[in-house]
Length: 378
Image 1 (tube, rainbow, N blue to C red):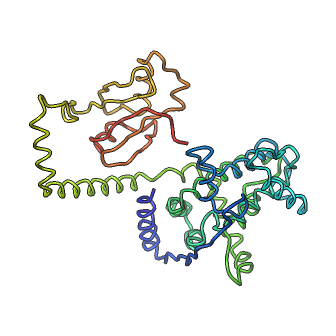
Image 2: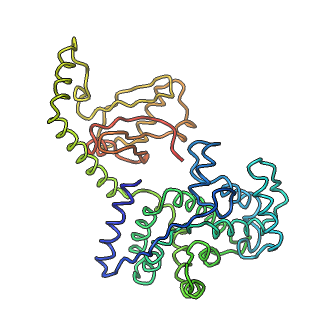
Image 3: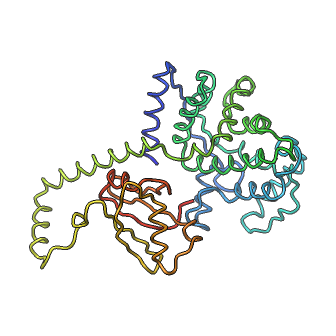
């Protein structure tokens, strides 16, 4: 995602410039949070600790548990997130969670829904760095105050989401998915989209400095509008834009070409390659031997681990999955739902293909790629 963030900043700057808007960024100061515990600890530190228990986890366990508790018992609670819990009880629960969470001895059944909501907001607000970062706070404000069309607001918002650190983006995604469920239960919990946005915004967009409270009050309606957009249109905000992927491909191709040119001038490497070629008894089959428009799909987790497939203008990624599972005696529709086709190598690092992606177009964009069926990355 480092290249995506780099390109997103360039695109956002150009986008704002085209609209006659200055892209302002706050100065970022390194904030040192707690190195131990759960509340007030940087997301990166929490993840580092949690990944020792569960490799690959993307959202801190304590954050997941708070969201899960509310999803299981609090979605229909009237005024959830708005009605505060007991301040003294929330403080006591926080201390108990800090002491017992890692040993998995904390009794979550004792936590009332409004207290759980209070703990969730406390966790978010106590993060050393706000979930949507101090640096780009002015850019979030500007997209509402200076841009009137929703379509253009969403374009800017999409790029801003791409700029977030991985840990912040993954945590924000989990939170917004939960908030969407809260709004979906509006008839029972009496929490409309605007109610939820107004309540949550001050915990996500946090001002620093002597005038922080005053600035936060002045920007309350604006930040609430940003949260409303995030909740309502979240499904389109997490996917990396196609044009950014295309630019990454070009950057990778340029890097590959530069590497090739350097190797051409490396006489030692050239001699080694020449000797290796002469030692071969017969040339191995290369990717160029595969007919045009034919890809070889690998599925290392299945009994039939490889299959050559001829592409046409109508072939989609989901068609390849369906054909593969049809010919694989151990395939099932359930496996199809949890696995996907990945484009690996060539001019991209690794790209999980959308089921409706037209494969011939993807193939032409990256003919040197490998195609692998494996579990989806959550």
